[in-house]
Length: 77
Image 1: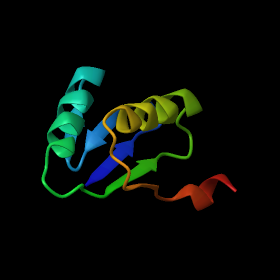
Image 2 (image 1 turned 120 degrees about the vertical axis):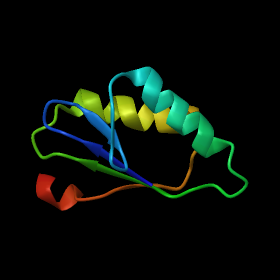
Image 3 (image 1 turned 90 degrees about the vertical axis):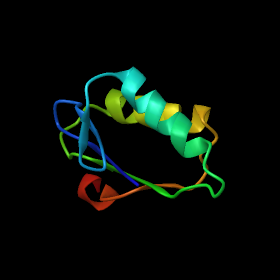
Image 4 (image 1 turned 45 degrees about the vertical axis):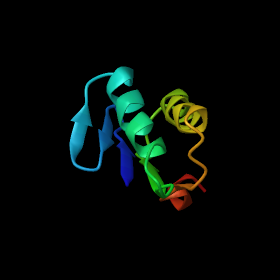
C-alpha cells in the first residue's frame, strides 16, 4: 500500500486523494484489521513540511502497523 504526501500536505492512499485526517484513519483501521499486516510505503514530496510526514507516521503507529517504510528518503540527504 502506498501513501503519498504532496508538497501541499495532501495525502493519497494508493491512487485515492484523502480529503481529511479521518479518511486516512479509516484506511489505516481497515489495513490494521487485515489477517496479514500489510506493508505500507510512505512517499513524501521533497518540499512537504515535516509536520505533515510526522502526522502520517504517528497515525500509522497508532494503528500498530509495523511494516512501514519511508520511500524516497534519499532526496532529503
